[in-house]
Image (cartoon, rainbow, N blue to C red; front, side, top):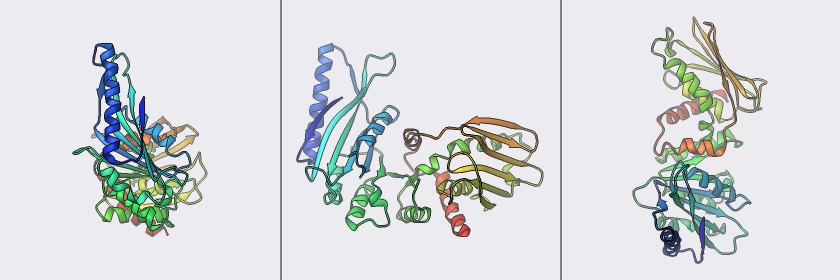
Length: 340
């Protein structure tokens, strides 16, 4: 890792500092008399956070993600304790693939800004985003996402969103009605939105999809006319509604929700009913899931809560719209309105 501090943090000064970082890495190549550094960038990954660690955890996650998704990472830490209005640090994140002598290096720009300067971050970012590459914005700025957000916080958020190809948020722990309404407003403006709560459903969705992907199956999915979702939280989070939306969006199938005891938070079981078969997929232990059918078949799966890295790694694999999520979200809003 090589780094440099930039103040004042004008785009041209930041890019100049990045150039010096690459020059330094190039000098190391000359010392070895061989090409030892490969510069990689397939997207721009922007993270905005108002967490107390000033972007440290976000930077660590970006460094991990770069190995699967080479990018120019930009971390924007909004902090009242910032020394300057806008300050930047530039560095190269490098690693060696197993068995290789050549390093792969990606650029990272860490920007620290005061809250009053956050709305003015847009022009700085415009000069830092490489042309013709996707721009993914992972928003961890909780104050800007809050219903109580000030107009300055919202202005900063929208400045980054306006430059983004896709926006990733996490509604976990948020008021569901408020969060989905906000996402709906963004979608109405044509923004591509992803919710990490949807990615948390992969462990549930994949086994169910595999059951019905079997061309020789006697009872197709269309025959299942009742869906029951069991959840363990005091109030259902986005996950029960998203999975119900995914399962019922095509035919507006009847869906019911029920609170139940189980293991951990979120979904406990999914039951699909038809006239001749019932399929039940449930958590049967802290780290196990069982998929069973009244036709006598049963299969067990390992369950583990996914890390933020694994959730983002999955979302970054889709840089544009996700039709499955879009359909599930639309149906989830309908189901939530009926549930209330």
